[in-house]
Length: 156
Length: 107
Image (tube, rainbow over all chains, first blue to last red):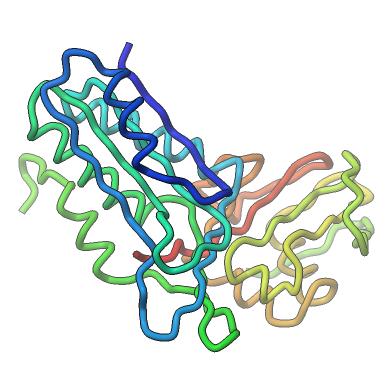
C-alpha cells in the first residue's frame, strides 16, 4: 500500500516537520523530492487569502494523488495545502514524493504542483492597501498544465 | 432560452437556518462578493429548483448583477459535491447544496 498523506490546513505549518516523518514512512526509498511554496513578498501585498469548498477541494487533491500514483512509480506522496489568511513568507503548499528513482519523484512533484496551481479548487484574493482583490486565472497556468497532456496517436 | 415559470412559489430565507427543507446555494470566490453573502437558502413550494429558477431568483432576491455574473460560461456548478457536466440541466431538491464555482485563481 503506497504511503499517502493529503491534507488541508487552516493554521500555519512548518514544512520541515513534515518531511522527516514522511521519509521515515517510506523505508527503502531511493529518493525524495520536496517542493515548498511560500507567499511571495510582492510589492504592496499585505496578505493572501485562499478559500476552498469542502466537498470538492480535498477530494480533488485525492484524485490528483491517484493520477500521480498512476502516472509515476511512487512509493509515497505528501500533499499539504494551506487555506485561510496568510502573510508573505508563510508556507502555502508542500508536496513531497518518495520513489525508488529520482525522475519519478521529481516529475511527480512538478505534476502535482502544476495541477494544484491551476486546476485545484482554490480561490485566492490578495490584500493591497487594505483592500481585497480577487486573483484571476493566468494564461501561464494553462500552458503549465499543457506540459502534461501527452499527444495521442492521430493528434496533429 | 425563455423561462416558463411553473405554478409554485419560492421563499427566500433571510438567514441560513441549517434546515433540511431548503436548498442551499454556496457562492465561491468573487461570486460571494457579487452576492454580498457566502450562502443563500431557498424554499420552493414544489420542493425543487432548476437553473432558470435560480437565475431568476438571483437578481430579484439576492443582488442585482448576480445572475449576469453566474451566466459567465466559465462558472461551473456543483450539486452535492459533484460538478455538473451541463449546469443548465440542474434540478435541486430540498436538502441539496448547490455550489457556484468561478474559475480558480492562478499561481
